Length: 253
Image (cartoon, rainbow, N blue to C red; front, side, top):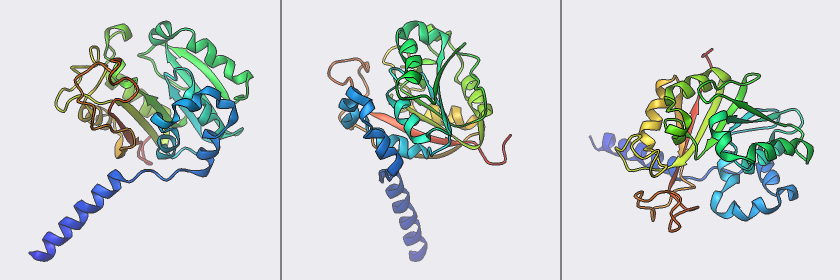
């Protein structure tokens, strides 16, 4: 019995360490983050931890990447340098979101002419996510929670997850970063606090056929009580965020 208890304790301890351990920073990612062309974007690095987040995704040279709802292109620029000339970064905007985010989609398109030639912008209906070719990574930050909201047409997240599964190569990764909502709240706060319960995200994505591969805790903030809208001055830019990594099984089509 003592041996069984010890073994269980060791397994639990290992799992805790695996969860808490920061991702090793890939040298190619570190170089991309240090790229002088990023300019003022670097001012946000201390709070956004791009090196750790992107390294956790496992992206590498030659990969095809989707930056879904890329905002200003903060992460797209880094991905561009990591995947290099043999890779590509698709900055995909749902039409519904692009209307709200102008002029970001227009500025994104200009990146291809200013040091990031392996990038391109695609606009499409939110309920019709698709890619020009199979991709290695679909990456989205602080936007998964928007899909079921009114301005997006109340898209069922299952529609997005199924489409992402189809777009990924076997073994491809779906990485989701979003603002944490209270445990058990499901999608209650998506349109009010702009947060979502990590548990419902995990369920929705695995229901689409993905395998949950782990979490990075680099954006955790215990000081966030999860009760305020993410735009509140007291918490904006420092919300508690979860980073979930899902993988399409190698044998999946």
